[in-house]
Image 1 (cartoon, rainbow, N blue to C red):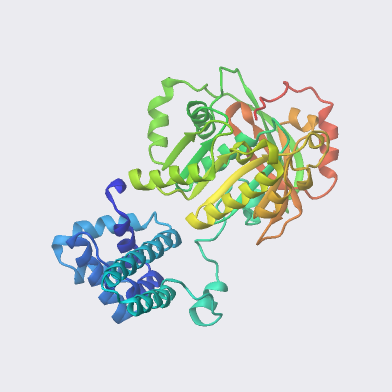
Image 2: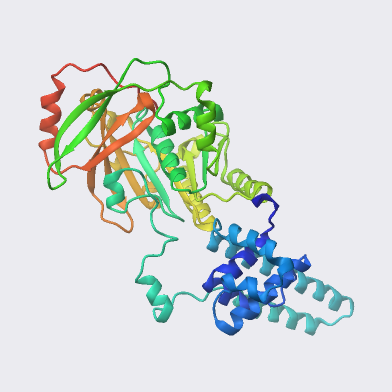
Amino acid sequence: MAAKFQFHDEVIALLLTDDATAQRLVPLIRDYAFPFDHQATVAQAALTFAAEFKSAVKEHAFTVIGEDHHAYLRDLFELSRGLHRDYVLKRLDQFLKEGAIRRTLSDSLNLMQEGEWDQIEKTFAEHSRGRVAYFNPGLSLRGDSLKKVMSQDPQTAAYTTGIRALDEAHVGPAPKTVYMTLAPAKRGKTWGLVHQGKVSLQHRLSVVHITLEMSEESMGRRYVQSMLSLTKRALPEVETTHLKRDSLGRLHGIEFDKVKRPEVSDKLFSHANELLARYKFYIKQFPTGQLTVPDLCAYLDSLEDLHGFVPDILLLDYADLMKLDPRNLRIETGVLFKELRGVAVDRGFALVTASQTNRSSSEVRWVRDDMVAEDWSKIGTADTILTYSQTKEERKLNLARLFVSNARDESDKWGCVITQAYAIGQYCLDSIRLPDETYWKMVDEIIGKPTDGDSEENS
């Protein structure tokens, strides 16, 4: 149903439902030329209400607007639930600016034919003064603005990661930010992105997963495997690791269990289809080393224009594999990450990606952010940075560790241990903060015991 909506409908949907938007739009679009009569009728009624009562009309729309428009109103209220307010307003600002420029040029061309050069100068001066009306002057720390600063804005709060230790610390992807995991080669970067995609879908966010290495079908298979806890191929049993806690919630021990799960198969199609059909989700493959930032923006524009789809989270697997000039790799990598962050801010989504660390990182106990490959400035661009570490002993026990290297608005410089089961597509089953060296003592005590072999490892 969303595909039939136009940009004008998105503007009206916000005008109907969002108090701040309604008040802002009253002076901006009172003379706005909506292309259809039903749009103009609903918008005018909403603007009149907002001008008088200083709030959006919301459910009162069904009272102040005639019954012949009620079906359209219901569609608009449904549309409003999935809109990025700031992104729609930014598009509106651009639309209004472009319209003003076209009018100014048209008027000036007419005046030019008449030789009215002084009037042309006045026309451009009026245009320059008029542009100020399209922009917010900034934040004033008083009244409603101060209240907003001192309260949690749900539009900027971190999304759930499904990793308990991170969620308890409010560390996760957030709108208009870059969330990045650093890891050595072949250490679960793709599985980590799939995990975030899965959790985001379960929380009813709209998700786009860009893959630059794997085919769309192979990536889709991983999502099915992860969301349904299926094995890649037939296995008798899969060993899982569990973290024991004491009465204070601290790490008390590590124990193991075995589970039997079916393999990915079309026999499970009906169940998988019933589950996955609920979600707003696209997987898109681009050739390795070919995707540019303009290409990415063009794809996102087509998703919105043709399918009415705007992502809350964009998973980029992974940014280092976009098109870069090998002759200026370090410089171009830094520029690329700045441009990607700009796209995330402009479009209002959370950008989640990964980056590979250098060779030395595969041999250390803790991966550090200064081990990042290529341009180090990407560390300064990302808002939240996690490093992924895993020793050979931990790999045998289905354990790994994450270190919160940087969290722009939350506490950082702390680590947690996670349990994994790649055989059934699980990047994280459980997690807990690492308190002290007792964890390593537990690992050393356990590693001497026989295990059923290494877990399946993927890039």
